[in-house]
Image (tube, rainbow, N blue to C red):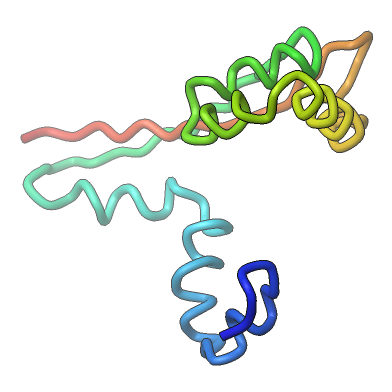
Length: 117
């Protein structure tokens, strides 16, 4: 195996099937297609609805502050003030196409499954 940062070496022995099964499916197949099979066990008349939600952050700082509730929260806090400023600039650059009048907005989706027990 390669060094931690050497992505290609770390995955060079992995088959394409493993990649497709563990990454492509979960990342790119809509969750709505997975939910009925997962909740059918023990339920009848399962229906899945997909809802789009607009998410708006006042600015990059607001988005970064919300990371405190995420698994990366402790790592973001550990960056210190200079590291968080660098992170803010990186977020502003990466989200530049989503920024309107300083606010960052985008769409997310959620799926709701309902059924009878």
